[in-house]
Image 1 (cartoon, rainbow, N blue to C red):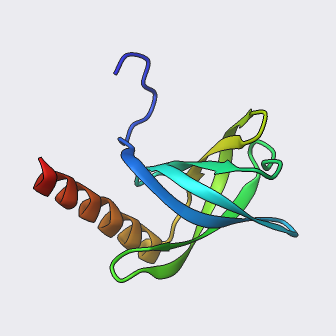
Image 2 (spheres, one colour; image 1 turned 180 degrees about the vertical axis):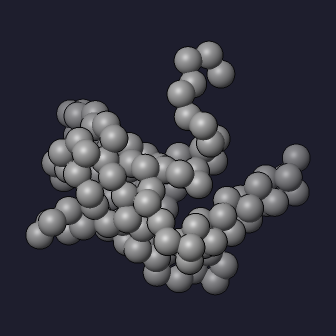
Length: 114
C-alpha cells in the first residue's frame, strides 16, 4: 500500500472491547487494527497524551483470557463523538506469545473462509 509506514501488517477487521488504564484513569474502549507490534484504540473518553505509557486490559486468545498489554501512545485523532489513538506494544515474552497466537488464529480462520 502506497504511503504505508507500518513494518508489520494489521489484521482487519479486528475488534475487541478493552479498558485503557492511563495513570489514575480507567475507561472502556475498542482495540482495532491489531498487529504484533501495535494497534488502534477507539474511545469516547479523552485519549491519553502522545508518548504516554498506558496499559490495555483485554480478553484475547482461545479460550479468551485477560491480558494486560503495556503500550506507548504514538498518535491521537480527535473526533466529534469518538477519539482514536495508535499505540506500539512493549511486551514481555508471555504477551508476545499471546498476541502471536491471536494473530495466527485470525489468519487461520481467514484462510478457511477464502
